[in-house]
Image (tube, rainbow, N blue to C red; front, side, top):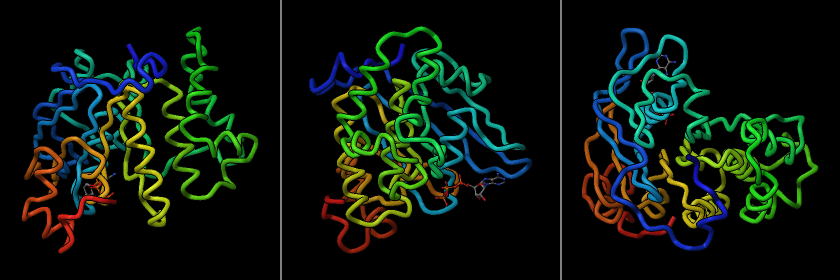
Length: 265
Ligand SMILES: Nc1ncnc2c1ncn2[C@@H]1O[C@H](COP(=O)(O)OP(=O)(O)OP(=O)(O)O)[C@@H](O)[C@H]1O
């Protein structure tokens, strides 16, 4: 079952013991090249978990493997249990149908279509399945992103970078996912816009959706997340509560710089 945005809105969702996602011994290869060592990772219900790491650490590969969307020649091994189901071996369609959603680094919007139509496409699967309430979901997305409501009729290709990221997030939410995976939502955005995007991610907590957030902007990611993993050359080298990671000498030195103890984006 996917999360119902309306049923938990504004309640502040408790994190239950059973994780929504449990990854065990996940490795990924492109042809003969290993991009991910066997890694273990969990995301609890209602939790925001971040994976931080430098360029090429394997962050996008990790999300692609979980989504079942590695590019041609790529494949993954290991166990991916999502909502108590082993989804390794399932195609993307089936994973999406079970409530997995990925906002890719490139955002992949339909540039000539309006904001509203991009959003409706995000909810199309539910609409086709006869699931009621897509209009309510659209309203909830507009409430989360008032700027999208203002620009509902505008072509997606004419939006600013920050607005595009909001649209990509909103479109993913239209599918009412149980787990939302975000690949570098801050990429290419000005600091003020990055702050806005991260404030929005923090607000998503109230919808009950669980979030797996991949970021190079470690400061902002650790500020918004409950827990984090540090990925280096395909391996998890550190994991724990965000507060602990933000104060860890290795994280400060490699990802935060001297001002690492400040916890604002
Ligand atoms: N389609 C591909 N074919 C071959 N190798 C790939 C492919 N995609 C990624 N890789 C390699 O896998 C490794 C991990 O790449 P990945 O894109 O997952 O890293 P990343 O942490 O997301 O980096 P970035 O932050 O730069 O996006 C890199 O060495 C990369 O060159």
